[in-house]
Length: 469
Image 1 (cartoon, rainbow, N blue to C red):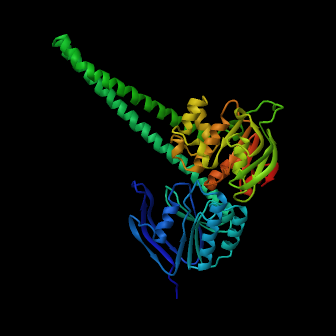
Image 2: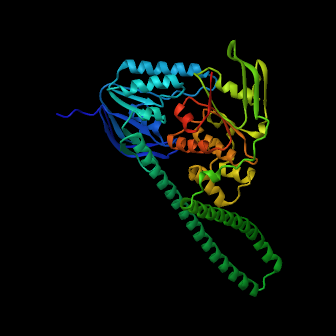
Image 3: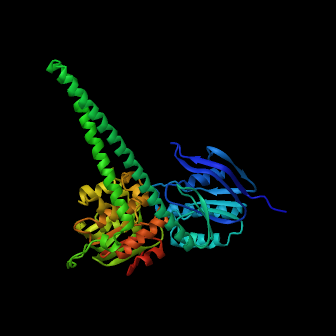
C-alpha cells in the first residue's frame, strides 16, 4: 500500500506582483526525500517555497500538504544589526526548527548570517536529517550533502539526480543554452526593427512622390513650407533615434554572437601589471578598533602590496572594521593607517558602494573607454557574466550580480588596481556566479585582501596568508 506524499503541487503557476511568470504549471510530489532547490538569483526560489508552505497564494493551481510542515524563511536584512547578533538569531531559529521535528522541514537560505563554525554545525545536522527536507541554498557545503536537486529557471523547472558536480555540469550546459536563446531574441528584435525601417523608407518614397505632384500644382511657397516644417523636424528626430537604436542593437547582437563562438580567454581579459613599486599599497601600524565599549582588535599591524591575504574569524570579530580602517574609511581608536587608494579597488559587502544608475556596459564604455561592441561582449563572456544583465543599472542587480559586475569594472580600470579589497564577495552569490568569481580571482595577477567565511573559496583563489581575528 503506497503512502500519500507529504507535499503535492498541481498545475502551479506563480507570478511576481508585476505579472512576470516565475513558475508555470508545475506539478510535483514529495515525501520524506531530501531535496535542494537551486537556481539563479531572482528566479523565484523563495517565492516558490512560500507558496508551498502556504505563506503566499499561487495565481493558479493548488498545493496539498499532509503531516506537520515547518518553514524557516530568510531573515530580513538589517544593516544596523551587528553580524554576530544576526548570526546568533539565525542559529536560534534553526535550533528551534530542528527540535520541532516536523514531517517536512523547509529552509530558505539557512546559512545566511552564519559564520564558518555555525555553517559546519548546520551541515552536520541536515546531513543526518531523516524526515522530509526541502532547502533553498547557494552554499556548496550544504548542497554537497544532497543527491536530489530541483532547478528553478526562467526556461522551466526540472529535477536533477546525482552529485553536486553532476548538477554543476548540467547548469553549465543550461547557461550556454540560455545565452543562445537570449541572442536569438535579440536577433528577432533587430529583424523587426529593420523591417520597420524598410516600411518607413517605403512611406518616405511615397511622400516624396506626393511632394513632386504638389509642386506641379504650384501652391503658395509659404503655405507649402508651413505644412512641411513640423513633420520634417519631428520625423527627422524620430528617425535618427530609431536608426541609432537599430544600429546599436545590431552591433551588440553581432558582437555577442561572435563572442559565443570565439571566446576571449580569461587571462587576456585581465590586466598586465608593470613591475611592482617598492611602496606598499596600504599600511596599518599598531591600530586598535572598538565597537562601542568592546575592543575588536588591538595593536594590529599589517602591510599589503601585491600579496594575497584572507581575513577570517567569527561574526563580530572586526573583519569589516579592519578593511574600513585600512582603506581610510574609518578612524582607529589608536595607531595609524595609510592607503594609496589610486592603487586599490574596493568592493563592500553586496557591492553596496557600487549601487550606480549606470549599467556595467555603460561604466565600461564611458569611464573605462571599452567602446568596441566586440570588446565589451568578449569581456562579459570571459567573466561568464549574463549578457541579459549587462544593460541593467547596477543598482537594480542582486547583491551577488553587482559584486561580479563591479569586479569586471575594476579589472578593466587603467591603471589596474594592484590590490583588490573584497568584503564577503560570495555572500548572496549563486554557485554558477561563484565558480566564475573563483576563476577570475584565481587568475588575478595582483594583490588580494579578502574577508570570507568560505574556506573552500579562499583555497580556490590561492590566498597565501591568513589573518585570524
